[in-house]
Length: 176
Image 1 (tube, one colour):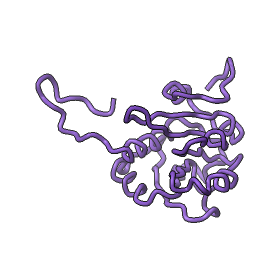
Image 2: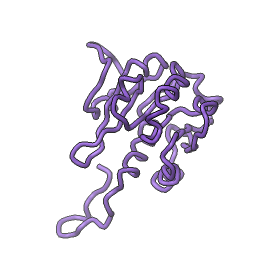
Image 3: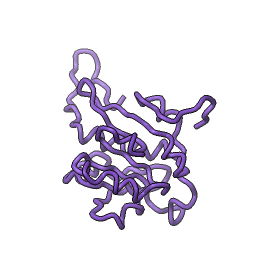
Image 4: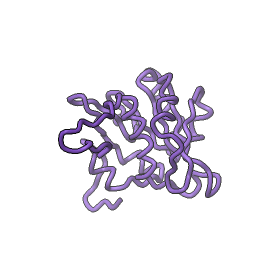
Protein backbone atom coordinates (compact mmCIF):
# COMPACT_ATOMS: atom_id res chain seq x y z
CA UNK A 1 0.00 0.00 0.00
CA UNK A 2 1.47 3.34 -1.00
CA UNK A 3 -0.44 5.47 1.49
CA UNK A 4 -2.30 4.81 4.70
CA UNK A 5 -5.37 6.71 5.73
CA UNK A 6 -5.13 8.98 8.72
CA UNK A 7 -7.50 6.72 10.64
CA UNK A 8 -11.24 6.55 11.20
CA UNK A 9 -12.93 9.84 10.48
CA UNK A 10 -9.75 11.40 9.05
CA UNK A 11 -9.40 11.72 5.33
CA UNK A 12 -5.92 11.15 3.99
CA UNK A 13 -4.60 14.47 2.79
CA UNK A 14 -2.36 12.98 0.14
CA UNK A 15 -3.69 13.81 -3.30
CA UNK A 16 -4.04 10.89 -5.71
CA UNK A 17 -0.99 10.16 -7.82
CA UNK A 18 -1.01 11.08 -11.49
CA UNK A 19 -0.48 8.39 -14.13
CA UNK A 20 3.09 9.62 -14.66
CA UNK A 21 3.82 9.48 -10.93
CA UNK A 22 2.51 5.90 -10.71
CA UNK A 23 4.66 4.84 -13.67
CA UNK A 24 7.69 6.59 -12.13
CA UNK A 25 7.20 4.65 -8.90
CA UNK A 26 6.83 1.40 -10.84
CA UNK A 27 10.09 2.09 -12.71
CA UNK A 28 11.88 2.80 -9.45
CA UNK A 29 10.47 -0.34 -7.86
CA UNK A 30 11.36 -2.55 -10.84
CA UNK A 31 15.00 -2.05 -9.80
CA UNK A 32 14.23 -3.91 -6.56
CA UNK A 33 12.85 -6.96 -8.37
CA UNK A 34 15.37 -7.51 -11.15
CA UNK A 35 18.77 -9.18 -10.89
CA UNK A 36 21.25 -7.98 -13.51
CA UNK A 37 24.27 -9.97 -14.64
CA UNK A 38 27.62 -8.91 -13.15
CA UNK A 39 28.72 -7.02 -16.27
CA UNK A 40 25.66 -4.75 -16.27
CA UNK A 41 27.42 -2.29 -13.94
CA UNK A 42 30.88 -0.79 -14.30
CA UNK A 43 31.59 -1.33 -10.58
CA UNK A 44 29.92 -2.24 -7.29
CA UNK A 45 28.91 1.35 -6.55
CA UNK A 46 27.72 2.33 -10.02
CA UNK A 47 24.18 3.75 -10.02
CA UNK A 48 21.13 2.08 -11.50
CA UNK A 49 20.38 4.21 -14.54
CA UNK A 50 16.82 4.52 -15.77
CA UNK A 51 16.84 5.84 -19.32
CA UNK A 52 13.80 7.59 -20.75
CA UNK A 53 13.13 7.84 -24.49
CA UNK A 54 10.41 10.33 -25.41
CA UNK A 55 7.89 11.59 -22.83
CA UNK A 56 9.20 15.10 -22.24
CA UNK A 57 8.93 16.04 -18.58
CA UNK A 58 8.84 12.45 -17.35
CA UNK A 59 12.40 12.68 -16.04
CA UNK A 60 11.50 15.66 -13.85
CA UNK A 61 8.41 13.86 -12.52
CA UNK A 62 10.52 10.81 -11.69
CA UNK A 63 12.98 12.91 -9.66
CA UNK A 64 10.11 14.54 -7.73
CA UNK A 65 8.52 11.19 -6.87
CA UNK A 66 11.62 9.17 -5.97
CA UNK A 67 13.94 11.81 -4.54
CA UNK A 68 17.35 10.49 -3.50
CA UNK A 69 16.29 6.98 -2.53
CA UNK A 70 18.57 4.04 -3.30
CA UNK A 71 18.06 0.40 -4.28
CA UNK A 72 20.46 -2.27 -3.01
CA UNK A 73 22.92 0.45 -1.93
CA UNK A 74 22.96 1.92 -5.43
CA UNK A 75 21.81 5.41 -6.26
CA UNK A 76 19.02 5.48 -8.86
CA UNK A 77 19.44 8.12 -11.55
CA UNK A 78 17.22 9.10 -14.45
CA UNK A 79 18.65 10.00 -17.84
CA UNK A 80 16.82 11.43 -20.83
CA UNK A 81 18.02 9.45 -23.87
CA UNK A 82 18.28 11.38 -27.12
CA UNK A 83 19.97 8.96 -29.54
CA UNK A 84 20.44 5.23 -29.99
CA UNK A 85 24.11 5.42 -28.94
CA UNK A 86 23.13 5.93 -25.27
CA UNK A 87 20.47 3.21 -25.09
CA UNK A 88 22.79 0.57 -23.62
CA UNK A 89 24.08 2.95 -20.93
CA UNK A 90 21.16 2.16 -18.63
CA UNK A 91 19.77 -0.79 -16.70
CA UNK A 92 16.10 0.15 -17.22
CA UNK A 93 14.84 1.79 -20.41
CA UNK A 94 11.40 3.39 -20.47
CA UNK A 95 10.12 3.94 -24.00
CA UNK A 96 7.26 6.43 -24.01
CA UNK A 97 4.26 6.12 -26.31
CA UNK A 98 5.57 9.09 -28.31
CA UNK A 99 8.24 6.73 -29.69
CA UNK A 100 5.77 4.19 -31.07
CA UNK A 101 7.02 4.78 -34.61
CA UNK A 102 10.63 4.05 -33.55
CA UNK A 103 9.89 1.14 -31.20
CA UNK A 104 11.31 -1.61 -33.41
CA UNK A 105 14.56 0.33 -33.93
CA UNK A 106 14.94 1.09 -30.20
CA UNK A 107 14.25 -2.48 -29.07
CA UNK A 108 16.60 -3.86 -31.72
CA UNK A 109 19.38 -1.56 -30.45
CA UNK A 110 19.22 -3.08 -26.94
CA UNK A 111 18.29 -6.64 -27.91
CA UNK A 112 20.18 -9.20 -25.79
CA UNK A 113 21.70 -6.39 -23.68
CA UNK A 114 21.22 -6.35 -19.91
CA UNK A 115 18.65 -3.57 -20.23
CA UNK A 116 15.12 -4.02 -18.86
CA UNK A 117 12.82 -2.53 -21.50
CA UNK A 118 9.56 -0.96 -20.33
CA UNK A 119 6.90 0.51 -22.60
CA UNK A 120 3.31 1.67 -22.74
CA UNK A 121 2.08 0.79 -26.22
CA UNK A 122 -0.07 -1.93 -27.75
CA UNK A 123 1.93 -4.92 -28.98
CA UNK A 124 5.01 -3.88 -26.93
CA UNK A 125 5.49 -7.44 -25.72
CA UNK A 126 5.09 -8.97 -29.17
CA UNK A 127 7.87 -6.66 -30.38
CA UNK A 128 10.21 -8.17 -27.75
CA UNK A 129 9.63 -5.58 -25.03
CA UNK A 130 9.90 -6.93 -21.46
CA UNK A 131 7.37 -5.00 -19.35
CA UNK A 132 4.38 -3.06 -20.65
CA UNK A 133 2.13 -0.64 -18.80
CA UNK A 134 -1.56 -0.89 -19.62
CA UNK A 135 -4.48 1.05 -18.21
CA UNK A 136 -7.69 -0.64 -17.10
CA UNK A 137 -10.44 1.00 -15.07
CA UNK A 138 -8.17 4.02 -14.50
CA UNK A 139 -5.44 1.85 -12.92
CA UNK A 140 -2.01 0.98 -14.25
CA UNK A 141 -1.47 -2.74 -14.89
CA UNK A 142 1.58 -4.73 -15.98
CA UNK A 143 2.24 -7.22 -18.75
CA UNK A 144 5.55 -9.09 -18.80
CA UNK A 145 7.40 -11.02 -21.51
CA UNK A 146 10.04 -13.25 -19.91
CA UNK A 147 11.58 -14.43 -23.19
CA UNK A 148 13.58 -11.26 -24.03
CA UNK A 149 14.41 -10.79 -20.33
CA UNK A 150 15.89 -14.28 -20.12
CA UNK A 151 17.84 -13.71 -23.35
CA UNK A 152 19.33 -10.60 -21.74
CA UNK A 153 20.26 -12.62 -18.61
CA UNK A 154 17.86 -10.61 -16.45
CA UNK A 155 16.14 -12.45 -13.62
CA UNK A 156 12.73 -11.06 -12.72
CA UNK A 157 11.53 -11.84 -9.21
CA UNK A 158 8.45 -13.96 -8.76
CA UNK A 159 7.09 -11.06 -6.67
CA UNK A 160 7.13 -8.91 -9.80
CA UNK A 161 5.50 -11.64 -11.87
CA UNK A 162 2.63 -12.07 -9.42
CA UNK A 163 1.48 -8.46 -9.86
CA UNK A 164 1.34 -8.74 -13.66
CA UNK A 165 -1.92 -9.40 -15.48
CA UNK A 166 -0.11 -11.17 -18.32
CA UNK A 167 3.17 -13.14 -18.18
CA UNK A 168 4.43 -14.51 -21.48
CA UNK A 169 7.16 -17.16 -21.66
CA UNK A 170 6.62 -18.58 -18.20
CA UNK A 171 7.16 -22.32 -18.17
CA UNK A 172 6.08 -24.80 -15.54
CA UNK A 173 8.74 -25.01 -12.89
CA UNK A 174 10.29 -21.64 -13.72
CA UNK A 175 12.12 -20.31 -10.67
CA UNK A 176 12.65 -16.63 -10.15
